[in-house]
Image (cartoon, rainbow, N blue to C red; front, side, top):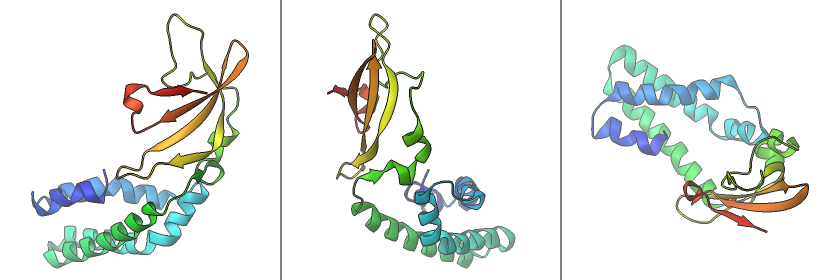
Amino acid sequence: MDLYENTPICFQDKDVKAMIELLRPMHEMLERGATTLKEQSFKQLYENELKEAWNSCLCYMRTKNIKEISQAWDLYYVVFRKISVSIRQVAPLDLNYVSPRLVQARDLELTVPGAYDPFGPLVTISSFNHTLQVISSKQRPRKVIIRGIINLKLFSYEIDYSSFKHNSVVWK
């Protein structure tokens, strides 16, 4: 659930309490702290405005003053616009920056997504490519290259997450 999805809950349904309950887990995640460099960067850029917006939501819950929720949404909208602009400028993502644990993962007992065949050899994940390609489109899907092993032979698999639900795996 994101700010874009929350907007109708607040303005069309006029259910501010439900909107706040949907935002609560996001703010709790922000409070827990950053574990990756990408999360640290996000916090540096947006934490102050998001905290101020959340405080306005909490103030609304105490006072029921509609000005508080309007102020919160003004702040959320500012953050939403900034994020929208930055997303359009995203180049390939360096997994060292967004998920260092994934870069370090080696010789997993997991199968390559979409490559499982109950009658074929088991394709396990050897490692992940260090970059994640972001496709320029409205939904910003990602392509990840996973190196897998079949019968001790190394293969690369390119998984396009825009059609991942169809188990699309390109063998290379």
